[in-house]
Amino acid sequence: MIRPLFSAGTSRGGTTFFTRILSLNEKAKMASDPCLPLFKKLRNQIYLINKISFSNDGPSSDFYFSDEKLKIMELIQETDLKIEFPQEDLPELREDLKQRMKLGAPELAPYFGNLNGENFIEIFSNCIQTMSEIYKAQDGSWCGFNDNWVSEYFPLLAKAFPTAKFIGIVRDPRSCITSITKIKPKKPLFVPPIYSFIRSWRKHVDFTIYMQSIPLFKDRFYLLQYENVARDPEGEIKKVCDYLDIVFSKEMLDTLKFRPLRGDKWQTYSHFKEELPDQGIYADSIDRWKTFLPSEAIEFIEFACGPELRYLGFNLSCYNSGPLSTKAQAFAESDLNDAKGWKLPMRDIKTEFNDDLKRYNILKKDGLTTEDIKKNFLFYETYSVLKN
Image: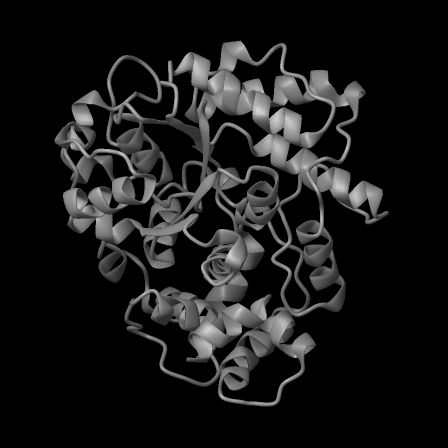
């Protein structure tokens, strides 16, 4: 019997690297970013059932600062994966999965042409079963996948798959932004506004804190920080193996044995490839943001994500307290206007700045309404952890 395993992180967050490490264990096999079209179809179906307008291929909401967006988040959390999958949409889903898999899991792409299921549980189950067959997963092994930006669906999967386990992968957003900024001149359509990225990063972390705090995920959720793996790969991967009750082997850290994205050899998966070794696990990229990003960009990121950064043990270097500097505001506004990649719907940017600043004040107060807490931190549990 295969045991389902799901992980989620953010783009440029080290998730492909992690799936390659884990897949070298004979008792764990994972795919890299194969199923985002299925998660989007799930979201769209929830919106359709609840008569909520949506963009078929748009990014997920960040859910902050709006009663309407918060209500949508709660509708998603209340959804049972037994909801019907429209059978007429199966051919489109199969093709979308195939195209998506060509990017991060090309070894899977040819095998999903007959994927089917009456409801979303069956679709997810059949995806994992197909992956387990392709990867030749042993009986009793973990098998699953990482998809980025989908942690809001983990509670639904946890209820649908009682034996499943979950891993939340987090990387310093300043490093993530450094990585995607590097390719902006060459691939502007792949680069979102920094505000959209860090709001989505923050949502991922707030969900992660929430899931660590509720009974549904007791002994079923593990927080993995990319920087810890880069600094101490053996120690950190041993902890993951203990969590999954599998045996660690040093072979898991041999990058020469990683499953390649394409071709027949793993290549360094970094936009700074020219500065890095061709093999091995390295920590050189951890602090690159300190010299690559301008101070106003660092201040802006730290302002928007300060409570979450501190929770994760990161130090703030440019933002201390209070409103953003004029220089940082100008940077954020210019970046928002210039970006060509996916964008979260946002109000006037000054309103967004003011609401992000209010989060700091709310953390200092008591006696707040549940609505105020959720609009700013999505969950009372997240607010409580960040406050303390």
